[in-house]
Length: 340
Image (cartoon, helix red, strand yellow):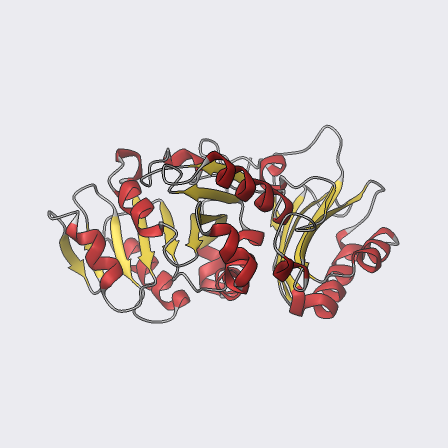
């Protein structure tokens, strides 16, 4: 079995004030996270300062890089994300910093996850050394419903998430929590939801939560795809503001035999035609001209090189493609893919 030895990346995002820094503080003090590097995309110096204030035994070991007492490596984003990721990897290889085995990237609260995902999946050196594991999004239990209704960034963050963390649950009523959970289920039925308080959560719930399992690095496509066969987001669940800018999620299943030679042009067409509104696409492809199944991923206009899932297969090999976007023409997309 060929293992994927690239470093798994967890993208941690969430709207302003949703509890990302509190969560990160708890994670960095967890013994199971000692071989983790963290990149903080901060505004000013508050993000790193906040973390260092709770890790007084930290030491600076390289430019913009701090080794915490727990063994975690903390780094501020001082240039482009791809540059920072390359710098960390090269320092790791040269043993200028401790060897880390996973990376967490914390974004600013107003970040659109699309360009960040594109950055992770397109730069050659980054793609060869890192792999996207999962997108984790924090949602404020009290204000989250209002935020995803009024702010496009918050809505996009929730829509592309693999894991949704409902924070500050000790401050919200059960009615608020249920309303938020129901709205998020409508917006992103494929995401796993956890309710947390004071940033407390088992790291295993959000780290190594994507395509590969934490032990043998074998593919777990069922966990990665998650999404049901079809779902429409938001109707009757969110305030009217969302209806005017609706985000939908649906899965196309293609049971008949196909080849990557046939499918790739259709996926390229899909990205070119609907890329402006395509927030995320991921899928598992069983192609007759490939030695093993393929994991595919796309963001907006770009279809990225597929990952070959050597050593893994399904009892019932079905090609499934999950699409998440705004105003996607579902019938046209289904028709195009099913005619391959």
